[in-house]
Length: 148
Image (cartoon, rainbow, N blue to C red; front, side, top):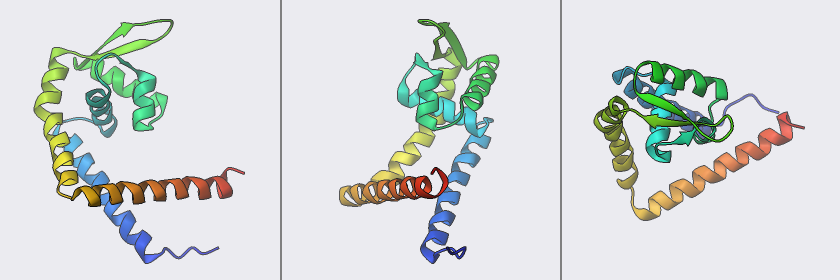
């Protein structure tokens, strides 16, 4: 087994970290934590009334992280909670939350869309195919080594 990083992986990691840093900078500009940004981003994608577990599945963040972020956003007046079936709590944007997402998150989503659509359809398809293949391989090999 080697500890030497493949040059391609070194470049990939650098690009991946640059992208993460861009999202972090956007969250900071919005006066949000990274997880707070992720919660609001998930609501933009999933729609009002989704459940905390839906946001966990969408963001791949822990229940505790999402719960803390939702609680903070409720306290700041951006979200409200409504009881559902059993212990389910539906999460809704308040008027202040809707204004925040329309004014601040919409431009972030537009930036993503512009970056993605700056590629041709073929490049988009290939980008997704290769990234999915990498993620699948990473999961498979991690399972072989760490999850025996």
